[in-house]
Length: 473
Image (cartoon, rainbow, N blue to C red; front, side):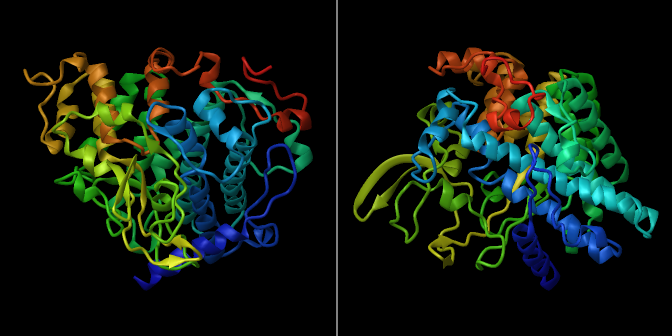
């Protein structure tokens, strides 16, 4: 346990050590002072942990994956007061401008994170270390790079592909590549990761939170689904299913809590350590709490739950009340405002006015695999495993809801309620081709062009060769 805590502290140090150099891609290494001196396994372990620390930025509760998948979907709204409100509401209203400061920040965050993987990949090649260790490091970095590019290509479409560290001047020669080329790079990275990463059961406790073979396979399955290749998706996801590395937990309630970490259902999970301002404590509890200070801290009011999401649950579905609170108490007064509670840490230690929560965040979990298998194969048996855990009627039974009469609608419904507010919804709707029709019917000003974010204007000002997405010129 001591070694694990030391790793958490190391990750926190890595976060604050990140530096940057001006360029249109923001391609700075983790530490300009030490990158040229990577020689030993200790050096590379520090660099690998630094690269993993970028997950705290990308999957921050107010980060790019949260804004796209929740605010741009029908799941959430916000009542937060910090930052530039107009720029935040543009995501919700589908009125994004090329000058939106958050879009630019997200672009920078992704490329900084990708650079942190590229610098390790570049330096490991010439290191005098064992081939096995070098392959393990490369596989870890290529998994992270694939994850980030997969999020980015779904967010912006065509992208500059950067796989080596570049100077600011070199970056200007890298223009946007077609989505197909980005996906080829993602698949290449993941296939290497699958070949070299260990099974989850073989990862030592001192390296908790690092990607496994199953994580890379699961991500590749989602990539194939996004590309419309259901045959390939089914094949790789069945390998995860048949590996016996993962299983649904007995109850949905057992998935959540500040001390629930790295369970049999978790495939890839971001690690947090609460209780200290010097460790990477979890911010989901505070950020998703309503915007008040009745508990001794200010909630940010991010990703407050829409009635539309709440009403999606069947009345007997236990997942609804385990995922969503109807409101909160101000003394003896109840304030009705629905908000997420999966990451609640009641009585978390307070530090600097913030609850130092301990909740981890699952990027990939086994229920996701089962629902993707149902999507890829058209077989309801996988979906019904998730339904059975919730104690609900199975697809095909007479008392199954008639609103979801096809397997595709059943999967869409099940993913929404099973994975609610876990940063999946908008990408799911885009993958199924239903984003425009469904969200338009709910009053969203969405068009086919608005299925991608604009390329930040400052990026194009710095490099005129970077093109803009349709609908933003």
